Amino acid sequence: MIHPPFWLTNDEWDEIREDEYDLLRLEFMDALKHEEEKLAVPTALLPANQPLSAIMQRAWDMGTIWFNLALETPLETNRIFYYHIQPRLAAAHGQDPKFREIMQCY
Image 1 (cartoon, rainbow, N blue to C red):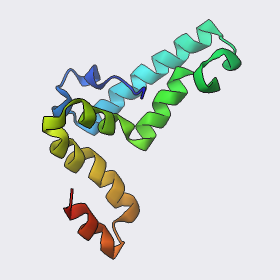
Image 2 (cartoon, rainbow, N blue to C red):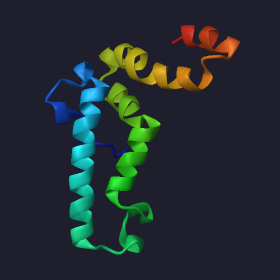
Image 3 (tube, rainbow, N blue to C red):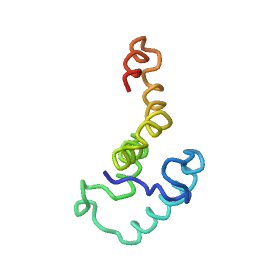
């Protein structure tokens, strides 16, 4: 999966603070979009008919950056899960009475 680079804040991946990272990510994404516009490659020639910046934005919106980092570093999977993945899931399903019961397994 393609996602924004985790090293933008110069922190180790397990020390990333999302609010600080997001500011730098937005700056990076603006620069990437600007470079894509200068290249003017027809969308039909791009992977998935989308520019890289759109694919990276969707990966950020979906939270796949955290999932991929967890897969790359199995020893820290719990930390990534509890700080980055579970809060996203809780936002959508936190009111479901089964949510806490299911999440305990992880």
